[in-house]
Length: 113
Image 1 (cartoon, rainbow, N blue to C red):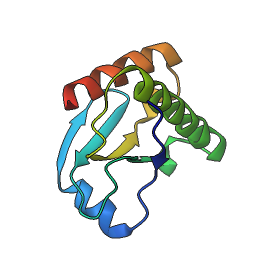
Image 2 (cartoon, one colour):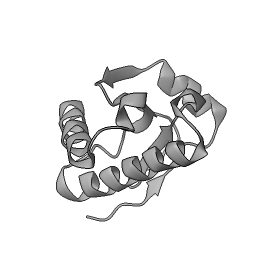
Image 3 (cartoon, rainbow, N blue to C red):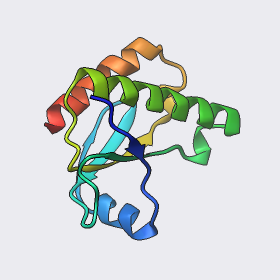
Image 4 (cartoon, rainbow, N blue to C red):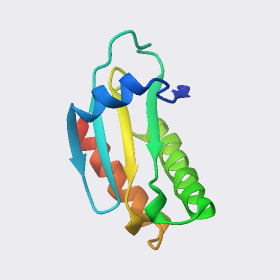
């Protein structure tokens, strides 16, 4: 099943998600919950990397990794499309192997089911 990934667009959406449920591991913190007026056929997710993590090259590398992992996750595991997600990256993500990060994030999204 191929679903289009949409980013959160409004400041209110970010603020509402930060008040909802969260799960965390050594690579990311994931906030998730139901948002009103959201299309349930598309995955509503945003990736955040803070400036403390490094320069723009490093931050974009982390976001590319996260997007790639989520594209694989949509194909391999069933992610709830009625939830909206906010994924905040941690600095440990930069120095670890891609397959370790992928395995850990798949486990986190399995928990959210």
